[in-house]
Amino acid sequence: MDSSRKILLDADVTSHFCKGGKHLLLVQMFSSRLVLLDVVRNELLRAQFLKPCLDTLLNHFNTDQMIVADDPDIAFEYSHLVEEFGPGESACMAYAHKSGDIIASSNLSDIRHYCKENDIEFMTTMDILLIARLEHYLTGQECDEFIKRVKNANSKLPCNSISEYDSICDKLKVERFLKLAK
Image 1 (cartoon, rainbow, N blue to C red):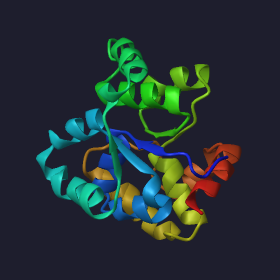
Image 2 (tube, rainbow, N blue to C red):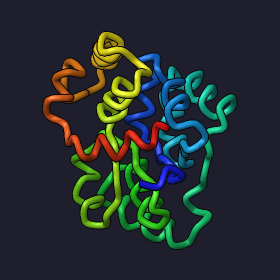
Image 3 (cartoon, rainbow, N blue to C red):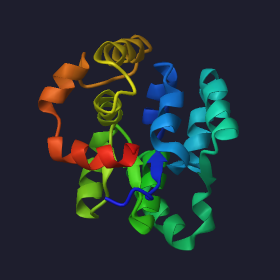
C-alpha cells in the first residue's frame, strides 16, 4: 500500500475522534495525509460543539482542505452519488474514485458497496482505533475508554471493547493499514 495516499475523513469518523477526545491521535498517526473535503467540513460545522476540535485539526495541524467542485469529474460523480447518499459520504466516494485515496468512514451501509465496486479502500473508526493499539499509540484500556466516551455521546460503534473488535475484524485489511501509520 502506498503510504503517500491521502486519507479522506468523513464526518462520522471525525466526529467520533472529537467526541472521544482523541482528534490529535489522527494527526499523530497519519501526519499530513489527512484531508477534510469542503462538503464534510460544512457538515461538521453544523454541530457547534465540534468547532473547537475542527479548528485544531484545520489550523494547527495542516489537515488539507479540498473543494469537491474544483474538479469537474469529481463534481459530476458527486452530483450522482448525493442523490442516494449523504453529502459527506458522496464527496469522499467521488473524490476517492478519482484520486485513489482512502476513505475514513464508519457509515458502511452507505459506502461499502460503492467502494467494493470501484476498488476504493476504506477504514472505519474501529480500524483506526485497532491500529492505534497495535502501534502503541493507545493502550487497550485507553481504546475501551474512547469507545465508552463515543457511545456515551450518542454515537454508534459496533463493539464495546477493542478486544471484541480485534476478534472480528478483517486482519488483512488492518495489516495493510498498519503501514499507513508509519
